[in-house]
Length: 240
Image (cartoon, rainbow, N blue to C red; front, side, top):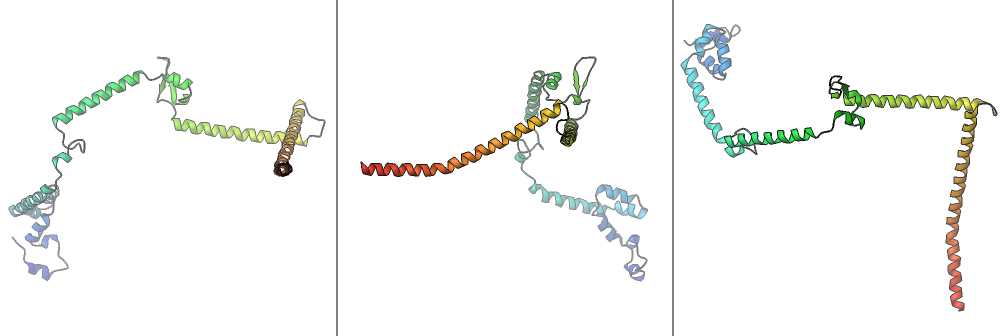
């Protein structure tokens, strides 16, 4: 039974959803799907009665029929739903071809896995870090996947190399300061060897610099010599 609209005008401040006319409530329920409509019907007796109204379901069926009639011409053709464009629609031939393909892939993979080298040989060739593997005492072989990840091992080795370089740099700087602070004539054989090698390096660098300067001077004098030779040949040709 429809509610009077005069009630809405008389008390607008106290109006609620249940004060709406049945026609408006049915129109609102028309936009709900089946699950939401069933959940709404469990809230109250009035909504349950309206959700079971034949007019509501007749409108829903009419709307669904119109929507399906509108969407059916827009669906893609069947050839676009089949392989190789898509895998939505598979025929028996497609299913058999896929099974045959995966069986061939399985056979090829099993053959390649049987020819792969052992894990111990890869570790001996430094292709896989030994930290990534674990030695199995039962089989006597290395097992992959039970150790540290390869990226962590590489990062660990990089940090260790940097620490070693820093330690060697500090040690060499301290050693050089100790050697330079000692007076001449003191120190062991290592100090004498270091000073002698330093003198040799300085002498070699000085001789290399002298050779470079000499070559530059010769390169600058060569154009003048060529010019003199050309002039001499010119005058000799005239005199002849």
